[in-house]
Amino acid sequence: MNSVVFGKTVRALVAIDWKHFFYAPEGEAQRLVGLSRDITQTKQAEQALQQLETELKEAQRIAKVGSWKWDPETDTVTWSEELYRIAGLDQHALRYVQGSREDYTPRVGNGCRL
Image 1 (cartoon, rainbow, N blue to C red):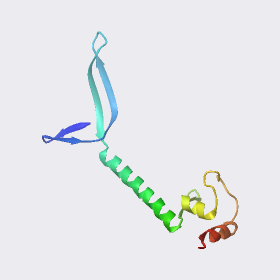
Image 2: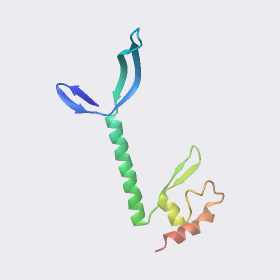
Image 3: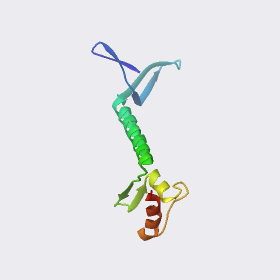
Image 4: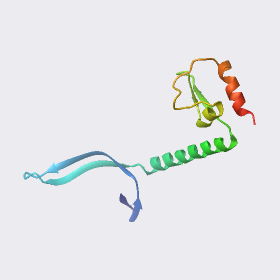
């Protein structure tokens, strides 16, 4: 969508949040009233984040380094794709694993040896 700002035409990504048609007695649409908002910056930020995630995955793959994060509120640990590969586990088949850190340390340790 193009918008005119101070006499210049600019290109913007727009989200339509609300719209309402007004109809003539014959049933034809006469007017459209709506509300839109510029989401250009949001979309650019999403694209930049996606690019950074892609670059991180590639860097981890090349360096053979994985990562993980722990959410203390839910006591959930999330591994990166590379950490699953290093441990020799299939991240898509693995839903919930019981065991202690000692159960997995040898697998991860073996995966880290060059």
